[in-house]
Figure (cartoon, rainbow, N blue to C red):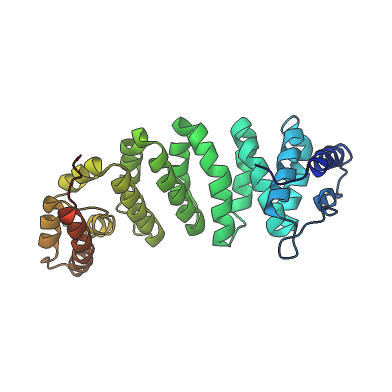
Length: 281
């Protein structure tokens, strides 16, 4: 429920529309739309007002988007966190309506981002909606980008995939097998991403994940063992037994990973073995 007074609701809609109608190259000070709004939160206009204005701008921009490309890029690069926030809110809609036209713009932006929080916001608000809308195309694209891009991009690609497997459990098997092709990569960021993704898969579909551990039973590949040990998010006796064997390995990396995993699995074991089923009275 909006807390914006009715008269201000009308005024902000009107001023947003006029701003787009009168926009000229280099005159991109969107703050004029809401600066007169009297209420402040810690001296700033509230997120509710900024979000409302962003939605009004989006309604106009989405009708003829390329007319406003320069404006959108300017506010992202020159208008700080507020500009980035408005850009992301608008692109949440634009990217799913015109994916081929706008993915290149997003790619050009992420190549210049060096702040993890900024990258997280871009991927959460723009790339994730794109993946949800077009999984058949963008699951493959995400894995191609993981192969090609720098560590900050890779880290956030995996964040998007972690979130997606919770949303669409029917795609878990497909996503896992694509991620599996990266298990032998030595890149620490890719390895951490695979660990987090395996953990997310375990939580979303424990039965499927337990089968993964059985398939890798007896492996002595340190890269595989490190991912399997790091990805544990539940307990079965079969998994525990395999980790106990790895803990006796002569390979230092395998042994170290397994010993750490044994400490983790004890916590899950305690939870799973003390949990009692509820019975109806």
